[in-house]
Amino acid sequence: MNANQMGPDGVPYAPDRGYQPAHQSPPGTTVGGNEYVRMSDPGLADYEPQFLDELEDAPTYRPTVGCIIPAYNEAETIAGVLDSLLQQTRLPDVIHLIVNNTSDDSVEIASHYAGPHTRMTAAGEQSTIIYVHDIGKNPDKKVGALNYGYSLVEHMDYLLGVDGDTTPEPDAVQHLVEEISSDDRIGGISAIYSIDDSALDGLMAKFLTAGQRAQFSAFNMQNLLKGRNMAVLGGQFSIFSTQALRDVLRDSHQRTPWVNDSEVEDSLLSLQIKSAGYLTKISARARAHVGGMDTLRSLDAQQVKWNFGAIDLMWPGQRGDTKGQPFHPNLRLRWFEHMSMVINITTRVMFVLLLAGSLNIHAFVFSPWWLIPPFASIWLNFRVARSMEFANKRDYLFAVLIVPAETYMVIRMGHFIRAWLKFFSRQQTDNWAAQAKAERGKGVAWLYPYVAFLVIFVIFAAIWTLLLPIQLRSDILAVCWPILGVITVLQTAWMVLKSMKRYRGFKA
Image (cartoon, rainbow, N blue to C red; front, side, top):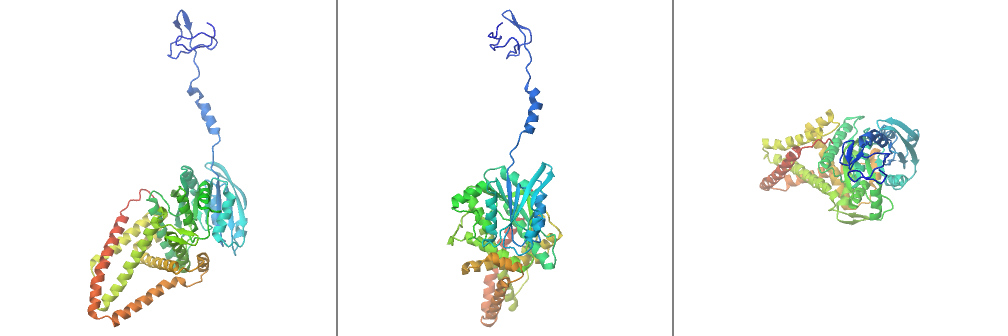
């Protein structure tokens, strides 16, 4: 046969290579007087070891992550933050510490960490470089530091924002990167936050920290159970897609991602990311411990700033350069929180006033049914404590001893009232400066709601005892107690339903 000859099944062959018919004829098949000898070609299985070795050696794309840390007077915590970042199972590719308006030793302490760092992890050797930037006096404060950091890492795939008092768990960065890189629809992911209670002095600090831990835990679980949709990508420890940030700049006609005309710059950016068509999520696994407020002054300043900023975003119309977006999907949970607080204030104020009025005319009659709402509250608080990943004895005591939780609720009511009054009074107040002042132990504004309530109570008591006849007092009590009863029954039913909700394996 010559090289043009065909095999028995029409497949050409070369004489020096033999023939292997497609129908797998046995060797020595004779067709038309000619014998075709089939020779074995290597199969795929023979190439498998070589293919796997080449695949193992092939380079894989590793998303780049730039970490920025805005720091203002963080001398006490910045070393712990940098240490926790250097202990990550997935190191950021670069870490930029942006020190601004500081008056302590933050720069000096951080300078000992400046430079390259390399460590061996389970994924192999990893490296990062820490840069320390002291930008001096910055009128835009944290917002200015964040935008300065963005300009340094905007060419990278992801921006990791970390507060100067936040210490992540060792695998936090790894989980955030894996989650955000798995879905291009995600514009940002927030870690699950818990308040650090490792070093507390004084009964008040322990009480306030326990309250903040319960507050954060309830908020986190609420978001985890709602499809892990997160309304606010908190600046404490969140990762952002830089492509999403660029889209925000284009759609919002901004030069920088964060703007200084909002009290809650992270909430506004989260709304803008959502409006640009991206998802904003809370991580299912990444965890970080944030610094809490250990005095009534500092807690009041922080919570009033948060509430005021949320109201500014929720309220219809244009206020300054910020447009209120009351129907934005990210603000639904905010409306629910504020309506719940209104109900909490109403029931507690009504109970105190009606109880005082009943005792005044000797018409108070105790009913065992009144014990149901407190027990429902205890059970709900206990479920919140159980949902914590790092719950401790203090968290459980806060839940089951109803007095601490109730006292903390009263404190939060004061924050809520102050924020709304501030909003409607249109005060031009620098709430960042107010918080810094409160953290230094100055200011008495946190007392205003309680002084106001005391004044209202005294006025009510005077009118009740001096101006109203006994029959009218009795009629008022007869009408108001049932109203309070209906509200309390509905509130109790909601607490029971919420406490029965399954957590589906999530830990807050």
